[in-house]
Amino acid sequence: MKIQRSFVCRAAAAAIAAFGTTAGAPALAAQQAYTFTQAGFNGGGVLQGRIVVDDLNHDGAITSVAGELLSFAMSLDGDTLVPSFSMGLQELGALNWRLGSLLLGDEILRRGAEGLISDYTLEMPFNYATGLGPTSVPGGYVIDMRHAAVSSTSQPVSVSAVPEPSSYALMGAGLALLAGLARRRSAR
Image (cartoon, rainbow, N blue to C red; front, side):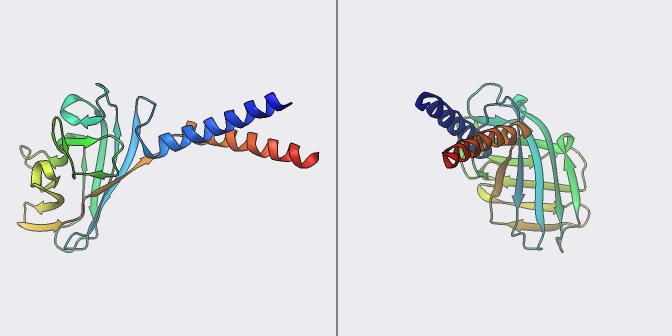
């Protein structure tokens, strides 16, 4: 009986530990989704987005020019200086980010400084840049090219992992094992 309980406890602990790993640090899976937010724009806007990445060379850093950014979407809403807009992967110039970091734009990496910048070669109505790479500071700015309006922030981009459904399933299995073990103990 003791051997079986010990195995159940270890399995449950492993399931919960695995969930914790995927929720906040680099994922074990090849692809991982993240959401990001940047607030504090002087026009009152909030920038939000979502990325899906794959660290192809396993160096712990995501670089869009290396093909490690699989999906990108962001939008700015609620700004009084720059109108709301959205931007996709085709409008992105570059992104450098240390995988698993809670901020984007505050570190110097081996392959350059962290940051995100829109593609200035396209004739887009809006341009965006943030981070040490493109702006030399962790904050960022949005430019409305049609009206020469600028909204800026000193706040860095905050990033959080989007747990995969399999992570929730693994955590649920671990919790079910713990509940079964507790029920079994109380029945004695």
